[in-house]
Length: 84
Image (tube, rainbow, N blue to C red):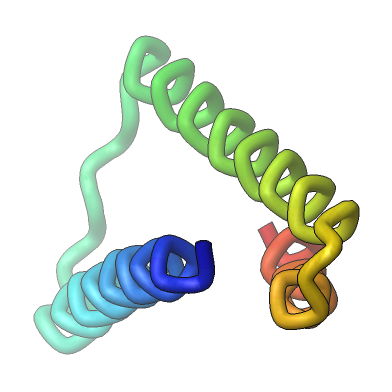
């Protein structure tokens, strides 16, 4: 169980790092980003709400676990949930 949590944490961190690198590249180039269409905004909101729901479900699952390590992970993951 704990290996799966570590894999998921690694995956989330890699994606976050990739977003950070892309944002820095755009700031350095100093060119404005493209405007999003309505369809793109719907996709964006859908993805963000889905990610929040998954994080909430993971937090609830970890919090209710009998394993102390998994419960400790729930305490750490609440910060990820609140910052999303």
